[in-house]
Image (cartoon, rainbow, N blue to C red):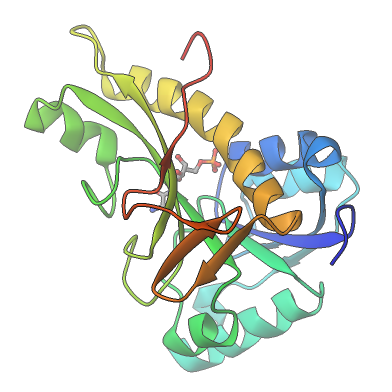
Length: 219
Ligand code: GAR
């Protein structure tokens, strides 16, 4: 894998603003978005891919009788793009164990919370309900647990008194769009690995909370 040849396949289910950030910043980070796989035929992210001339594959879970056949079709679609790195970007299906096993060590996920806090859905709402002072984004390697794999990097904001779910979603998205292409770039250029018992960046084992990266100005 050379600096400019890492094939990235992005999995989406909806809006695809992280996909857009990955596409827009691919030139500077050493990967190319080789394909987009989506489980929802009306996802706006598919239009983003088409606009950028990136091939797409739709694997609709409703069209399959069970988990195993859906996973098989998903794997086939992803493998069709010869991925070296797979990035889940708002992909709202839990990946099957067989899928994760097949691609262990090269699947990333982005999650809108400071993991291990607030795994799962509705994180902005839960941050407000819990009265958290801080919120943010985490990027982690995927394992069989939902939002539970080893954390690579986090970026945070202070929750403001007047924040709402919508404002938090907007502010966290800004963190996401800065962080995801960077982390994909670390992997693409050989700096990031899932290794023996943890995550390694530039040969050094990261703490279990990952590396802290500053929020972009204005977030
Ligand atoms: C992002 O905020 C991402 O972190 C979240 O879905 C959103 C997708 O936005 N993912 C999860 O909640 C995964 N557990 P996008 O479609 O605009 O990129």
